[in-house]
Length: 116
Image (tube, rainbow, N blue to C red; front, top):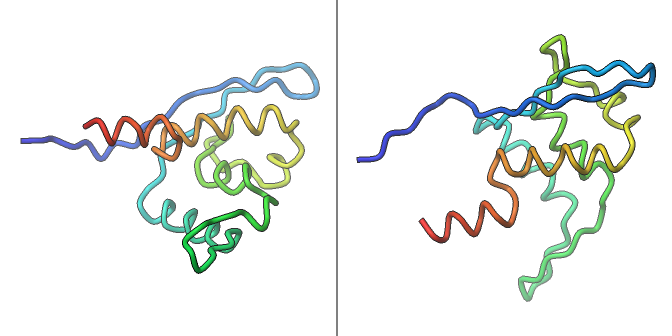
């Protein structure tokens, strides 16, 4: 028999602000409702052809759309879109990859699921 925990997994990260002060943020696994909202937001950015091929027609917000649903700041409040957009793309990308992994949205997670 399998046992499942409903506790959301999370990972802490430190981000150094413009004043050079490091602050702790947390990236978490999403609830089912947030995952569905994320999938719906991404569907609108995809172009699905009649032959089943899929391509992205809009990359705007590709990182921030996931991070806004998964990340809280030092005050335990969601990080604002304005704040997320102000961070360098390399920081957004690294945080996005953590959020993908925690939520089973990356290639490695899909491969692990196939092997289970």
